[in-house]
Image (cartoon, rainbow, N blue to C red; front, side, top):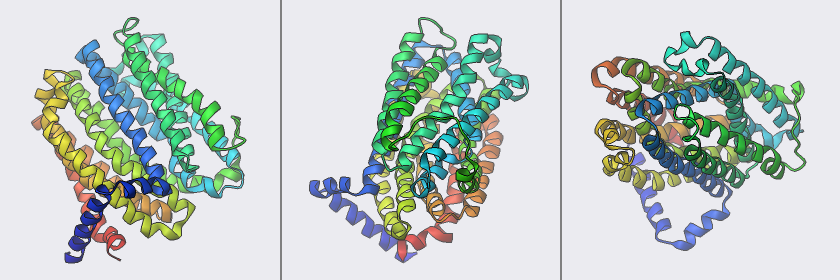
Length: 438
């Protein structure tokens, strides 16, 4: 324990020396791990910032009930995306560098996930009365139904192109693609309120996804992968090795994502649309903190895939970067929680400030878990990742379900902190401290 504390003190001193030296900060941009991590975090930060503004505008232009239903629809689409993604995002990052025909691998991934997600969207609509009767608005209007059917595949393909560009170590293109989406989403939100006060939020989200996807496929992706042209094909030979690894990632990614995607539906059904709107705003704001370790660890995965012999060095560098960024960001959100939520409206601040602070605390054990899982992905050791993410999902969902009727949306914050902390304790004392100490 003492050696771990001494490592943390040494890490703190190194971080302060970097912050005080502009030359050292500039030199980080010449290191591939840091440069790509910075672009990934810039992409995440732009999503967080624009998402923050997006929901402020949405809360002002649309009723609380509409915001609650729209956030649930978006969460459902994201859940279907996760189910249909097959873990190929991590698989492509891990294997693109060593693929004998990366273009066939890319097109096979796009074709398979596109068809699967279209089928999943259709199945969801057919069984809507079973899955979530509260979202019957999707099936009541044929136009809304078509938007949803197209939105889910577009979401899957858009996310996949993003991972491809990161896998090619061209995260600057990923940043450009996400920036285009965020700007389009905000502009369309204001424009569509004139045409639809019930589906304008979802409409702006889906139209922006289409714009970003087309730019990625026909402009950015050919630059990240020279010679790339879109073609609908499934090459089993090129695909087989990636699918084995991706399926294990699929399970772990599904377990990791499910709580954040299922909880809005649970809150909607147990507490109603207004409570879900309050919950979703706090959850979205806290996700800004998760973007920091996620961006750094995805860059860690890309670098590890390129040269696994330097993994230990990259792990230490990643932890340093996360620490220097996460602590001040968490402190700011904690102390300004009331003021930040008040931007959405007074009711959001009154109902969600405690939840947001629980989620801020949970960001620290969550960061530990995210880094550890990507270390295991580089090593292609997926069994502990699957077990731990499944355990995390079980705790988060079951404890939330028990606490929501008693504590309201604050119960979700306690459940999420409990789940992330339980996993982080296991991770640190089981394996992660060896990467820091040795």
